[in-house]
Image (cartoon, rainbow, N blue to C red; front, side, top):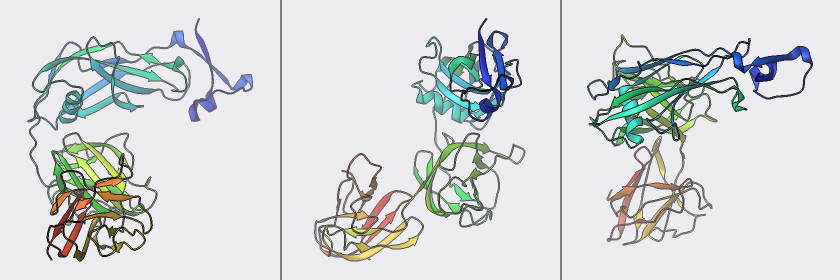
Length: 377
């Protein structure tokens, strides 16, 4: 008989194993354990995803595991893979203590396309649930029987609409008439830099100023730095919680990026000061004498200064230090282009070229869109 000994008090808090007095031991008989059982969707069915129903929810539900002892509640990991792959390369959908998980058709479609499944095709898929008490040892892992379901994907047609950010953690609070418009940065992605607070902590996103729906809030399992979004198309739908910012180390300027199709978000700290230097400037490449930009608003910087003809420039965040530094790539021109930062980039970004005619120019840096502009004032 397969038996595993756990220390209950430590198992609940840490999942670690230590020596202890016999009266503190819990004996877990794995032969008496029953694993999870997927109940929804029904096996052998076909789920058809569509753009028209992209906000509709696909529900996965399973019967709970029973370990036969008064232990900590088991955790469940829902996985999917292509049929016949024997879960050699599974995709994790959720880690939870609940026995139900919902995902929008848009988010599930994105996951399938990311696996290389062609849009507009029907793919045979397999799902399973793994339950466990502690991930410190696979001894408590119990898998559900595999559930076979076919899913038809769709080609994503992206309609760009304005997206707005608001919440107690933002500079505008919960006033939906003053929500901050986010910049469209390509595809279904939007970004904005704002001064985020930790004390009030919550943020959400809406698609229309003055209206609460449609809106996006936090899906289960997210952090103050990244996670999934839950879409609320109408007031009759469940209200998602706001994204909790209390894990941020300090209040300050942060770049928030939202993908309304993949239903994801990221939040990262950005600089609140920037300096200009380069062969085309009056200070050359002297990083200790670099010229300060004016911070017009969170993430937006400007400077008006003489530039030499056909020279090169870069931006740094700290006087006397080369990193972090900002530059461009081969697509950058003397008028505009994308911005890249090192770190975290793999190497120093390229120098930014300046106009062919010497003169006084305004340089604008937008960290929301991650682009620069050079123009005559």
